[in-house]
Image (cartoon, rainbow, N blue to C red; front, side):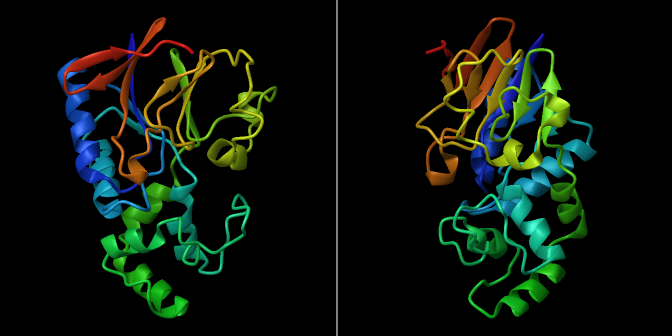
Length: 240
């Protein structure tokens, strides 16, 4: 049994396709691949990332995509231009927070952020395909596989999976990252950018910082072992 997983993408379409190619070389074109979310923002082609993953699912690829916190911004903005994500400590609007990357996402759809918010919203509604908005809005918050629980940010320790709150699943850091609890399945997540993937025993962080110009991580998880996939092949990831 084998599960492949890809870290936070953040609009990096070329890196996403390269990560898929590394996976295909290791496990074939029909490999089961789970993506930990954050398809959007910061990188140059969020539209291309969404279209690539959506088309893959339409074509019958075994591609799972879970929802990241950044994947909520665009579809929620399209429904309610004044919505502010309560997970942001600053309570800033998506368009106003310089670190979120809204400008890059909207530019990939041909929308200029440097205009009144009402005009940005009107143009975005016309420019973003309904299929993209529906795809993003309907992403699941986790994927449970016999080898791992795949989720964007993490889980609230001590809370049953069916009782986990979406806000935690896409935003949590404090309470999860420092936990040494045995979560049952290995928790595979992103959200907290590192230099590369790291195995902590009870969890595996695969956000290597593609949103900040670093390589996009792809890993293969098998019974009792995890490897990072590189252009040269597999590199073991041992628990710290």
